[in-house]
Length: 210
Image (cartoon, rainbow, N blue to C red; front, side, top):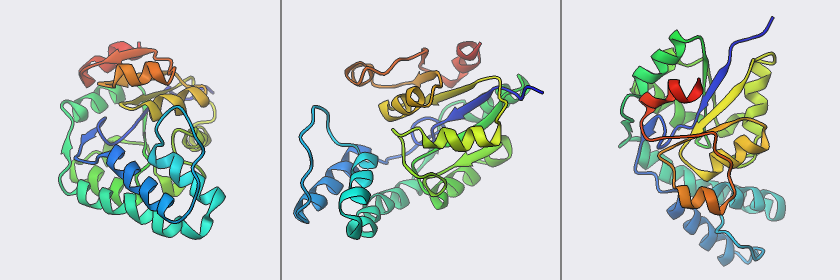
């Protein structure tokens, strides 16, 4: 039997708004890594925090724990000041009524995800929460979609909703359409991220999914 379509949401700046500054996290991680003598390959685009973490695990695994402490500190501070994105709860409820299975896929750890989702009473509306504790590699790697598809192996389709290029690249790599929510269009274009739809309000999501 075919399973329901699955809508997979990013967390920060998609379902919740928080002061988590991912560029600041990446800058701090990059400075730490360089100061420890790790050479970063030259590249066109700036390094993201997940890419830096992945590089350290490959090239300097002895630094993994110290490097991971940087985003953890930022995330713990940000989660206390998180607010619910406008119409997030209403949109989840509407999609449930339309028959969608609902998941969150975040690069945050389980502590942060559970804290924020519980605070805004979103957990009862969700069928699955995938955090960095559940994956081998972080977005922009598509490994989180492996976890999603393991939960719904016969899903009629899987769609990813997020605000960042890392969400879009991960969706593309995992063969899922990407819906960009209030995303930086120029950054998506620079990264050649294919976008199925762009929305500025979560209330527009049911129509975009149709």
